[in-house]
Image (cartoon, rainbow, N blue to C red; front, side, top):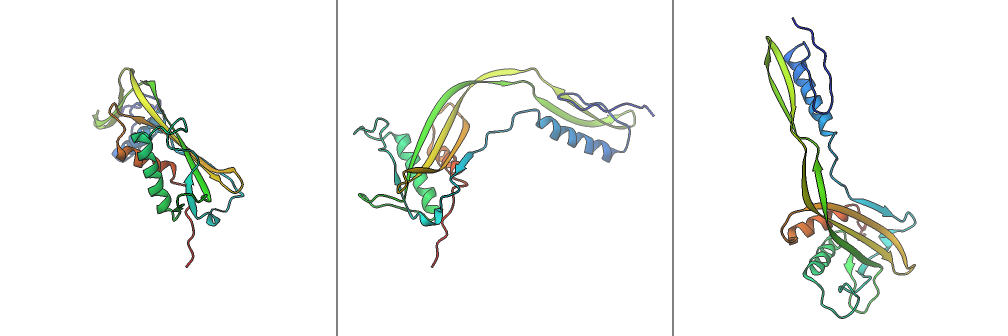
Length: 205
């Protein structure tokens, strides 16, 4: 029986003598290890004021007008969709929209941006299992790197305690976007992700 060493690295794997189950396990381990060589997708990042008691907040409103310049310009379609998605999520978390003319307990605002970036894929990985010399062999193949232009959207949502005029919560998420216009479904998904750890009110009967 041939004796060969196993070397694990990004794009490199050699056969090791042993049982088929052992080889299969090694190949699965190599798959997980190689996946770690690529950067993980961005997660939402949030901060919260430890002194804030979110059960005391009942209503929410908006910190700034919908128009970008704070004037009388009409809100854009994207602004309208973002606010509608935020309203839906806040109500799902047991908060109530403040009536017109009433100062809300929490004042919400957001910042949205879209930027073009150059994305580099250093390599692609292919893993195969096959017989070799009467045993089971595993192999990993790689391809050349590639570069492409992508659009990345980011959304920041934050909440201000109106009584203290102090920010009590903030979260941000970034996501790679397609070439088409941002759809309502994408906006709803991103807003839900940003507000995923926003405290849910405890409603007592």
